[in-house]
Amino acid sequence: MGDKQSPGFPVGRVVGDRLAHAGCEQQLDQAGELDQVRAGHERWCRRALAVLSQTGTADIDDAWCARFDRIADDAGAALAWSAGQESRRVPAAELAAELARPGIWR
Image (cartoon, rainbow, N blue to C red; front, top):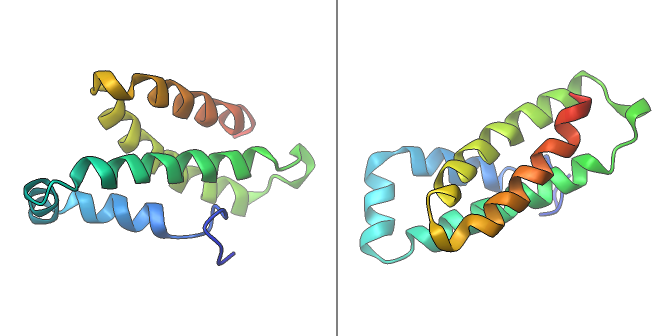
């Protein structure tokens, strides 16, 4: 589970948690890196959801549901940001579609 494609990889979760801290978001914004970090978080969510979507329905268990719930929380935060940015609406729609696929199984 240590690769960046794995839904268990904590990068997206760490980014989401760090953006939640007011000082960090402000510092990233001042450095001109906030949009880049948020876009990266959005991409991580899409990759993690795509990996979860490859799971067969027979393999869905409590651990899978817990991973989905954590990723869905991150995806919700990423969607809130990207849907509010005119230039990010297509990626937001793609993220919403990625969230819907495994969400049906949940």
